[in-house]
Length: 250
Image 1: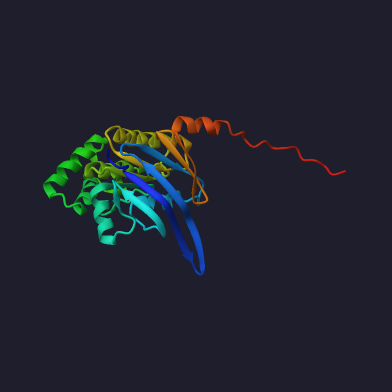
Image 2: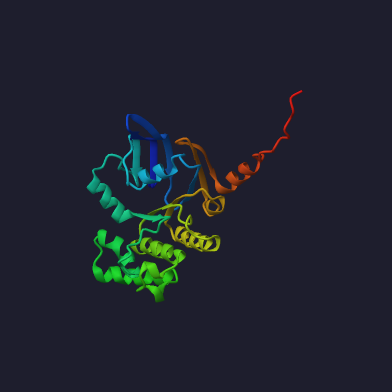
């Protein structure tokens, strides 16, 4: 039996601010199987982005263990972490992270360059990915000539072409209008159906609804981890705050 794709155990992450130590994660344990679509939710400062950065090997934990596809990766050196990112992890961010002096197709090719894929194969994959997401006719446009939704599509094509097993998305619809956000989430859902594992950070319940499972965080800890349908049912049972009439002291 294959090990879980993600197996995080008692992860802690502390940040130093002057003389103070500020905990971002307080012992997070999380397992995600290959092929899952998981949304991580929580208020600002809950630790969800810090957790995503650790899962993507963009940062190292202060303490705890992390195994990716059965391999211990928490304490790897920067070069080894970069190699794993290039070959097996795709990132989608709210800010798109496109290079303004590169065309759409050149931006898509970039991640494959780091993975060591030959130039001819990079171009073929990039053209195919841009066509799949509906931008085949705009592949030679600069990012500044594309709308926000089109730029995010290029970012998704960049991941699609590279073919990673794991896709990490941090508020991928945060800079988009509602209709465009739905289009982006439909693309991510299609990628998951094709076998990619997706872990998505969001504050938006409508975005989280595309996931199969919802993990909720607060104050650096996981407070619930439920299938999406059960999570929605549990949240609907929480009463809304009721404004009480003011009373006058006698």
